Length: 351
Image (tube, rainbow, N blue to C red; front, side, top):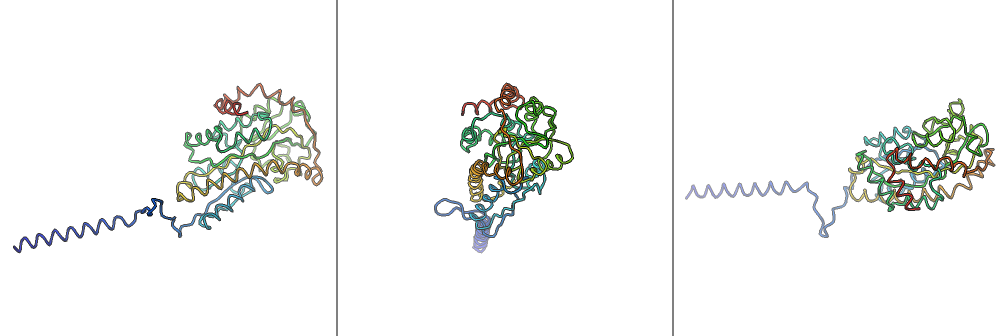
């Protein structure tokens, strides 16, 4: 009898210990609430995030960055804090994209031309005179368009460690130089012209007659001063924000393309955020992209006036048809060179 009692006591002790261990294992697990939703995020956890861009205010990219910062911080009650670093403070575009891949920079707002080494298909947007209007262009950039969705897929397919948050209209691009008005393609022959790191754009401007030189945009001012280049192309806001009007007093209204802005994020950063914050970031970025497009196009009339009246810029019209005639026959060949035939086809189908 005593042996049986000892066995029963031992079995009871083992049972109680097992129950205690099982209870302890469940303490660290996230438990769903009664309605099946996840528990709220940890109120004590905060996130300090960096957003880099190479431009200075006034610029649509700065507008996008500041709107995004404000919305994310407000919607997360300050638990996600975004610090904006303008003017290339964290490096040129290619540098910040590399840093974003490693997770040391969290967001980059910039031009897709400088993304070409990572996603060559972005260069299709560098085909001059591809779009007839801003409305046609922005239809392609819409978050739900097949083109935008294709680029989001390319980020994943190429395993870049990056996530596309949105595409935006960065404004029309024009030609600037320190020598003379540019009215027709022949006027560019022999001019050393700064271009972003996009082989496609180098081929296009080379076909027109310019001598392409690849430089980061934040080096354009000194390059003009020292004679490294004579000409460059940019948006009006980029030109004013960088004060390159001080060294390049001629503006030619080529309006050769609408600039595509990418708003990208480190996957490492995105993956460490709670799901609620992921949704807030995605929504705020989408809204910021729409705001950027709106501000870029609305600002142009005022910026032309500012350049002419305040900064003594000489502005001239150009023969756009003559420029388009030179570059249009190159579209298919150049798109094929960068594996962008499908992108070009999708764009043409949406026109």
